[in-house]
Amino acid sequence: MATNEEQTRWVVHGERLIYDNEWIRLGLVDVEIPDGERFEHHAVHLGRAAMTVLVDEQNRVLMMWRHRFLFDRWGWELPGGLVEVGEDPKDTAAREIEEETGYRPKELEHLITFQPMVGMVDSEHVVFLGRGAELVGEPVGEVEADRLEWIPMAEIPDMIARGDVWNSGVLVGLLYARERLNGARG
Image 1 (cartoon, rainbow, N blue to C red):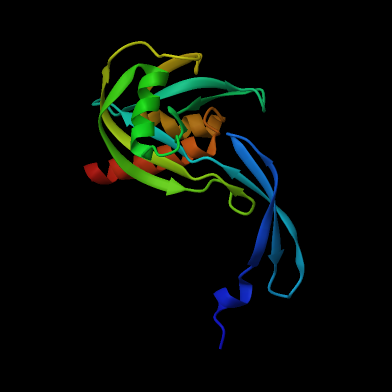
Image 2: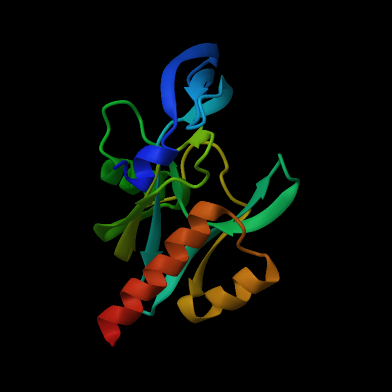
């Protein structure tokens, strides 16, 4: 007797590349659904991203107030960026914190890895929890944020409720970090 997974599994027969550059790869995937119907389904492949919930000794998280042009919207975000080819996501997280904020984390530990939009987008996000930070300089490179602030973790739920935090990676990272940190205290 077939398991439920076997009865609902889609079969992939191949993928045809439509567009490809260093940021995004778009393909049409030849799929067959369980009833035997076969069609092409869009697939968007993005590079892995790494970000960090950096918390100081006062239980505040370092956040960046950023504008996102696609939505013409401002929001609080975590430092992070794309993992370079051959780079360990933990190294990416540490590099991005320093480049974007001027801080160097004292400790970094893996928090969670997730896919923010399954179904047609492959964009793995690796989130780290940083504890403690040392200011080592000014942010470098392009201007990433309008401002940086150390925000008390206790304020995060209200910020989310107001819509000031709306990025999926930031939401997942902050909520998971709050659970981890509260569990460590409890």
